[in-house]
Length: 241
Image 1 (cartoon, rainbow, N blue to C red):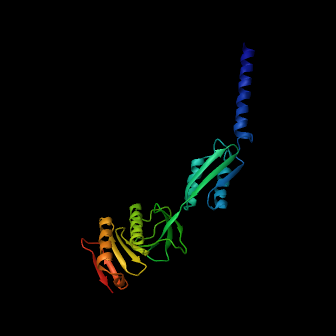
Image 2: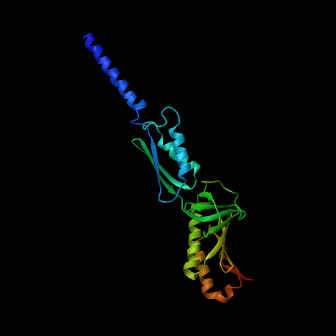
Image 3: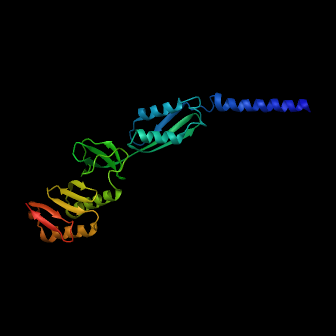
């Protein structure tokens, strides 16, 4: 009986050592390669550098069991603000990373036109802006950081509504917007005149008042010399140059 127990112990120990070897020392569960997938160009070299650093970290850094996908995803998003979503999936001996980039919706400039950034449809700042045909917003706010909201998303919804109104009703584009204290908005049309809005009031009603003025009171010829239309009060006011 003692001899039988001894052999059970030996076999158990051998099995345990075998499992330890497979898990920690054999190449079977070692991550050896990675693949980056995206439908648009991304910084593969930079993302690859993060992955290589994670895989080479510590004794078990490249282990299938111990590689931390969640932390790697967070690191990619932190380093590259232009990436909206990063999914890191482990496969046997391989990592696959799916990347989704942010889509620029507008350019926001804080206080001056030399301090401009790209913003996505969630109003998240993610990249320094260069020359662009995107809608331009001048903001009186102090500069914000990458991955911060430039302003509440509902403001972007209102800006889109105003842009669509001008384009759809009068085939008139808005050249730029000026946002003050995340409440008052000034829209500059391509004709050079301004429309003033209070974003805390009823925007749909303000657009109705604006449409009635432009259709019934301010002729297309008068619009050429129009300075502004002010919709921040119960009654709309306008001024010629």
